[in-house]
Image: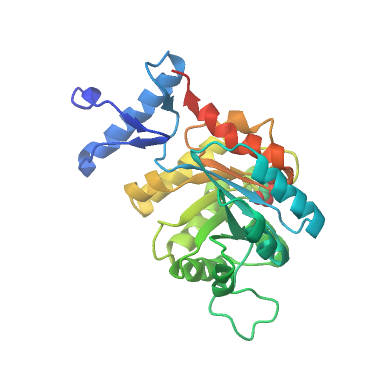
Length: 307
Ligand code: PGA
């Protein structure tokens, strides 16, 4: 311990960069860093630092779901184009398929566009489906997969979702991979089991983790106004990061963004963002209002401890 106490964490914008360590040193080093970060928020630091356990950039996605008309989307895009967004955040919005082209053509390049679903393979005779190639053709950079509404309303299972994720990643789309437990699963003490199983279904098939953002979205919190407490969210995010560390690699655990979704709004985002393992948000209802979505994007500032 005496040896590691000489380490001083370096902060590079929002990213915490750490010296290269061998695996015997790295575990205790990370524990040390985490305790330093916790201390950093309780005493006056000498410069701006970030309470961020992962090394990835803050990420906020707006999931518009099956909402909007040409007119309302024109207004939303114009609000987003004129709003001020912090630079240290990756921002993505996910319109319904039929408006993707309208949005990609009119939205500022500062914000990337995501689809809400994609097919498991190349396009062809699959009525009603949209292929990854078509999404890329119109400038889409991301796709949301494994969302609870597709799992529990449409009936998609882990294997099917895994196929979609593998295909999308292999073709160069980023994947927002959603996981999360039902209320009865939480009440039965199965939250971690459910999340780990859904995570494993992704881990078993994806070619790499470079282009994946994990969205932890407890199903009981989605669209209900019943947001998880910062502690409830942080607890699962730590467990997910730990699972990645044990089952994928330490590097992937550190660099993969783990974002929270479920009734995030302009009033609760700052407290959630302060949690070390919350690397951003996936926002439904509140992403349909430009100024409120901007507030959520800009909650990254609450991660910064004033100098
Ligand atoms: P919500 O939806 O913010 O409306 O709860 C989140 C989501 O489903 O991604």
